[in-house]
Length: 475
Image 1 (cartoon, rainbow, N blue to C red):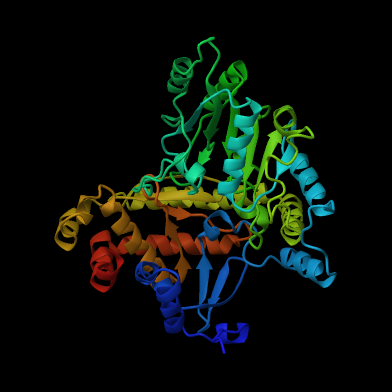
Image 2 (image 1 turned 135 degrees about the vertical axis):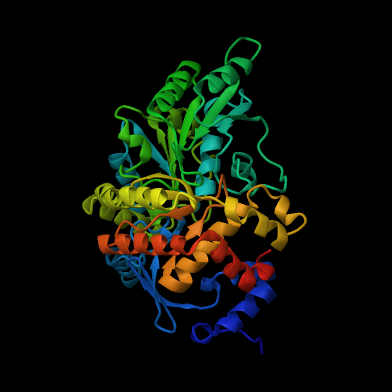
């Protein structure tokens, strides 16, 4: 008989057994990497709000925000109730010859939240798929007659072949094939964009650029576009009939203090906005691109092209996922997630600024908005130590020192203070402070106290302790 693991058996597995299953069937190096932090050594029993409880009863304050997924926190009661209701009533998940009230209602809710004529939605599974759908939309809008697409140098739009070719992450150390015609501009440099558009014209003088992708707030680098730059892009793209795409996959649903970052600027409307992560309420794998009506209708609103955008893919508009997203939007609006983010900012902003000033030997700068901040650490004092501990190719990574000190701080926060944090693998690798929007203000203060105490230990001591225990298995 086939030796299958039942659900009951799965829930009784020890951490060592889980590690071995990963080594055998997932990725052995992932085990080696993740167990270099304290949180790789134990299993979670349950999670609620901003708190993770491990099997041994340890309560961990989750300040990762699920890397953008958990604006609603873990297992928000309204999200859970919506999913239970769907299952209890025996609703049908998917069948393309029946129209879904959930798809229709979700499209309406997206249009209601977003400004202007951003009315038409496409609902795949992941952020990267939403990006690729937006690329196809822009290309189809121009009838395949334009060949150039612009993206920023610090961009992060996903890791599929198409979205990966639009990503400027340092993670892209292996060159996969990608979309042809991708041209890169410096983030925030309007004159550079203007020059590139001028350089990429067809023989008749019209623009060869079919789309421009930009993250108004770059969550992987904690940089943001100025209002002048974004409005300048809108003016350029309108003049040249270029499809302007705002990627708000991470920053949507209140995270930075407005429902979407670009919405802080009245009257600024992209041609397409992409969203995912907290769109699914922390429980549903769903994404969307939402397009201005004239763009969408020209590209796909005909009998011939109605299915060309791949609305017939297997999991498009999956019932329970759409029902979850409907409730997630209602929660974000009714609980005023942007106001929650601004309330968190009123604590985090001054608190992180104070810590940066008091620990200027450890902290280069802090920057962010709402409930999404980056702490940029200074590796200078441990550079000699790094050279001794990591000779050869590892030490030649220009960001290795920053990564090492940031890992040491994350490790200390977890081990000594029961706080779960992470750092980005893009840009200059800041320590990310991105709590769920349901986080209690007292827990924000607790995080600040813990970070203050950790930095007070000093980066050389933190790194020495961390390296002695873990670096041999990390790199």
